[in-house]
Length: 150
Image 1 (cartoon, one colour):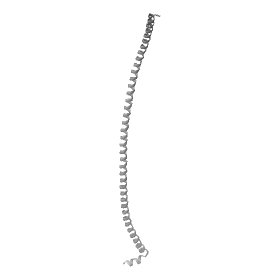
Image 2 (tube, rainbow, N blue to C red):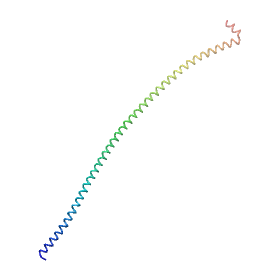
Image 3 (cartoon, rainbow, N blue to C red):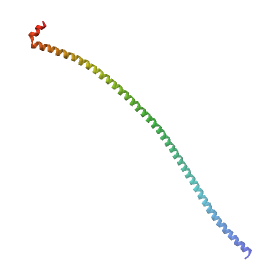
Image 4 (cartoon, rainbow, N blue to C red):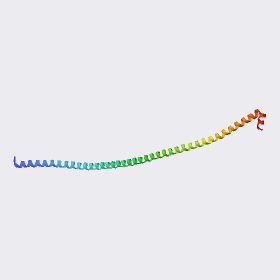
């Protein structure tokens, strides 16, 4: 073969290689374009996920703050309730002691009044019994008693 034919063959092979390279380059450009689109969409999805995560974290923080404030309110309410119960118990105990003291004083006063009344009634009873005895003796023997008296 001659040099010219070798050159023609080489040129034909080079042209074929160039066409193949162009096809590969065009396919690579399409692949790069698709990869670029995919990258852009992935970045958008990542940004959305980061926003969702940020919102979720903010929501968690809000929930934690709310729970903490409710816990503090609960503790305060519980302390108030305990204080009220303690105060009411103390006041009830004091009222009970005062009531018992008043009742004992009233019972003592009633007992004193009753013993005074009973004493008066006993005096009257003895006076009535004595008078009845005298009247009974006078009636049983009216003549002798009148004589003894006068």
